Length: 351
Image (cartoon, rainbow, N blue to C red; front, side, top):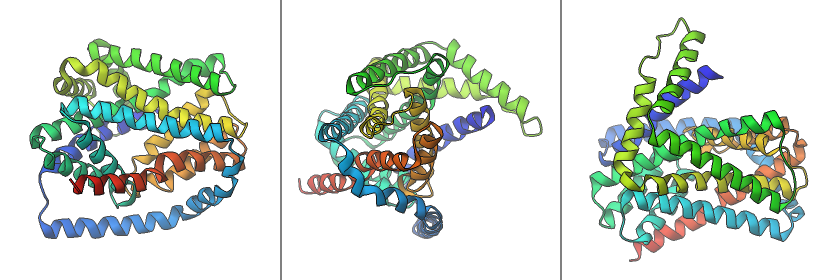
């Protein structure tokens, strides 16, 4: 696990940095065509392999009537809060004078990322073009989007650490009131940890050294990692250079974005009456977010459904109810934003 985490952190940092920085440079038409054909082929094969999982999850839509109305309303409100946090984070990084370009570009780019092959890069490219068309400078837009992606992904990679104390000492169950308590706890602890890592060098350098040392010890035959602590510090400084004194507000927005998204899944489990310990739900949630980064299907379609269902089942949720909870979560976090994103794109183009 430590080996995989070290490699994943290294690859994630490189991929997220390089993908966003390349948005401003258009690929030559032949290369772009070959890339499109390649992604279409890979996506087609991948969707064929994960199609049974998608059908199983989506096929549970009739059981959505088992959810009380107040639970559905809570999930919708939590997802609205998730988007609001992301908009606030992007507006801070972009230093945009108006909210509308940030909101419409994020909604449109997010929707494209969920339906297009290699969707993450295409969605980011669409958002970049819309932001530049609204009058924001090209170079600073690329830098800001890079910082936002790095900060948001770093937060979700760090969140599993928060589950360790709860796993050792037990969790709490209950209704929406206790769900709110769980959310506040996750938010406060994650914000504190993030502030320490952003404000001081030693903890982040120590963390990188531990991951690097464990990875090198477990993979003695591979080329050893030597620069992970310096790379983490470099990317951290890149975020701070972009955000400046606004980094504290940006951190709160990034943590709030993932906390509210996590609570959407937790409320879904509360609604069907089988919530496992919040720490186990947090681990399943973070695993699903990593699966969503798999670029071979749009938005991790199929991989998230299969992985999240399996992880919830391992956490003690009965398989049928795990499928239903996964469907409810993906309904609000994946499917409903699609028409909203199309509407935002049309609204931006009608100005």
